[in-house]
Length: 444
Image 1 (cartoon, rainbow, N blue to C red):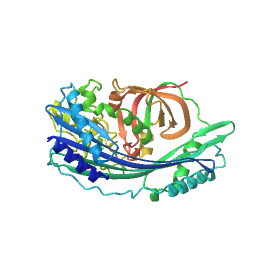
Image 2 (cartoon, rainbow, N blue to C red):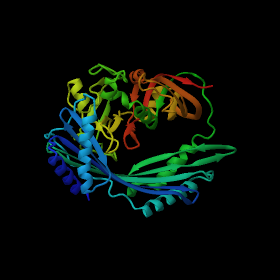
Image 3 (cartoon, one colour):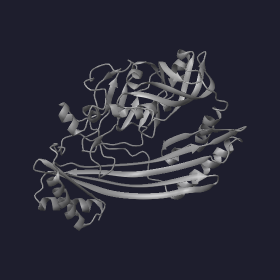
Image 4 (cartoon, rainbow, N blue to C red):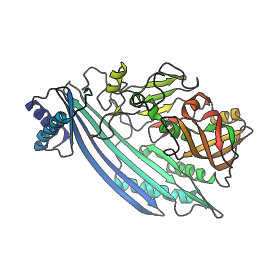
């Protein structure tokens, strides 16, 4: 059975059991990925999946059941299992089925259909060839990767909602290795969007330049520095600490932002936006995991915390409306909270102006150890970094083997200037370059 037929069968099964409050959440996806080593395809995979979760309210309790088997018999069994699940749950958590009445926009699909496997292989081989051609010092170990996916999300409930979103995207990644003398240097470039829009020459050149620019990197002396974090590095940091803006984490005592709404938590130049339909994002959504209409919001505006991110449960507990940030990583997942496209709003300064304002300091281009070296509960982080010295307000020699350490909550208040060069990472998290003062650097 296809989704529509199975949905009708589930609706019928729910009616036969007298279930009047329920929700159907359905996802389907397909993906293809290609990995190139030397001049051959090292890895090639395709995958498709689909599944549905049925959630119902029986008395005061919610029951759940999920399936990947779309048959008439399974529709009856799915409802029966959800009812049985409701009877066995001892939790007194309130169940929420969203009501009709939100205004929903129509998505304008910008990334087209998922490319064929043959198209992905051809592009990946071409990218690998361009990596080797970009510099005579490129050696084996260099790899090119292309992957893509298309996804459908659908939600239907007994209150009259019948919603559907479709997204598709392609990701292109290049990982060159450059040998200079006896030393090896890594580089990378990562783009997401539509395959037909990728400039493979530019991607290869960017990745190779990333590797070549680190040749001769040395250590840096420990101390306090003014640091310019690249858009990539700052996006990595924002991604790592994004959970602190979740109302669920706050209500569990796992974020220090409890009771901070309306207060200054960052410098005046910092505005953090959550936008489910950001123009350059490849993952756009019109409704969240509970069917609440999504919308763009300034979570932090000019340094002030405007709102936490809510689903229906946390919103009721806080006495506010949901912000449309309920998340379901898969059709069978319980409802959580996550941002959509989460980024620091660009300022008006070019990156070179940030260098000039820093004068003497460090330009951090990449961070590592984000899982082990950062604590989202306390905000503390100590992360391995690479980058360049800043000398007389200009980018100088490359440096490596050092760590940057601070506390995310005080870090936000020490931002001196925000650049104009917004960069998205993984299609969801983004930032321009930012200048931050008084950062602890652990080096030689």
